[in-house]
Structures are given as C-alpha cells and as structure tokens.
Length: 268
Image 1 (cartoon, rainbow, N blue to C red):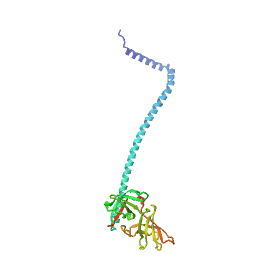
Image 2: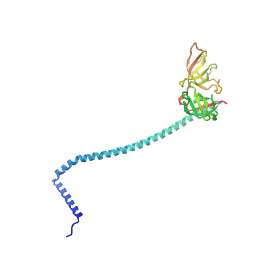
Image 3: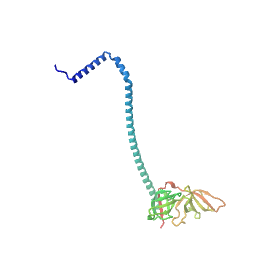
Image 4: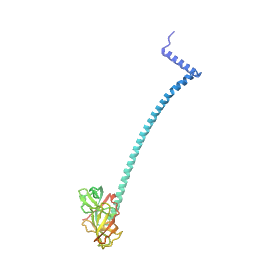
C-alpha cells in the first residue's frame, strides 16, 4: 500500500480541522471561547485601528498641506505677475499722460525742452533733491528751470554730470527763485522753500496789494529762467506794519512727492 505524501497529509489534516471548527461553531460549542477571544483581542484591535487611522490621517494632512503649499505658491506667482503687468501698464500710462500734457504745453511756448525721468530722490542728504537721467550731453546746465505737470515750475538744476543731473525742488530751504504776482508788474519777490513743507514768497514791498488766489509766476530776472512760468497761487498773506516787506504762502498744484518725469527748459 503506497504511503501518502506528507504535504497531502498536512492538507487533509488542515481541512479536517477547519471542517471541525466550522461544525463546532455551527452547533455553538465554541461560542464561549469565541467571546473570550474577541474580548481579549478587542483592545489590541482598537489600538491597531486607531494607529492605522492616525497614520492615514497624517498622510492625508501632509498630502493636503503639500498641495496647498504648491497652490499657494502658484497663486503668489500669478499675483506677482499681475502686479508687474499692472505696474508696467500704470508706468506706461503715466508716461503717456505726461508726454501728452507736455506736448500741449510745448506747442504754445517758444522754448526747447528736454524730458527727463526721475531716477533717484533725496540724494543730496537733507535737501529735497531729485536725480534725473539727463545731463551735460543733453545740453543741461546749472540754473535751468524744471517743470512738472501742466508746465508748473518745480525746481532748478543745481548740479550737472555727463549723463545725469540734480534738481533742487522749489520747496527746499536752499531754493531761490525770482518771482512776481501776475498782472501786477511791480510786485516782485523771491520764492523760497520751507524745508520741503511749503513755499513762501518773501521780500514783497509792503505797499503792494496782493490777495489770496493771485497767480505767482517767475519774474524773468534770472538768466536761465524765463518770465511767466507758473509757480502757484497765493494762499495766505502775512503783513507786519513795522516791517519793510510782507510775505505770502504759495500753494503749488504739484505733489512734489510724486514727481516721476520732468521737463527741463533749455535757453539758447
């Protein structure tokens, strides 16, 4: 009689054991033992489930966080690109608006102009000075008047280099401009700045009658500064009876903190 191979015997024994267990389970003989096994294994199963669930949650959170970081970076890049495009658009629009206004102004005046960009501010220490991208090679000279929007005088050239120049704003305390009240030929004075805070017209003869709202322009008494360039309007007049001169606070329509382009008048 041939012997049964060991693997076959093992398989048969296993099948018999499984069948016996199913039978015993079916007739509820194993019920107490099954309840005991479940009771003993339940804490371990709960711990295993909680641990696996925590790992799964952590993985999902990490994955979500990485996705959010990626999306956040993409959104930031898009915002930066849009801001650059907006900045370029606004810069081009500002330049076009300035050039359009200056074209209207230059068509009504006999002077030659050099349009310059402001490339630096307050480069002169405590002075209100702007650095311009035009210099001696463009015919720029010390003392030439500088105009802002609508042809309003905003300063004079105070220093010149080959490719750039420095402009002292009219509201700087070292700035001096010979001026007059338009329509009153004898009302001559000097425009001086007040540490960047304002403009005053001083050395006005006490007997001259000036009023709020009067237009103040250049007098033409300076070599490179033609007459009748608009400076601003009289805002307030201060008279002291015993003094020889009176003075007036002048309001300029220009916001000196926002000057980005200027017109420099060249007198031949």
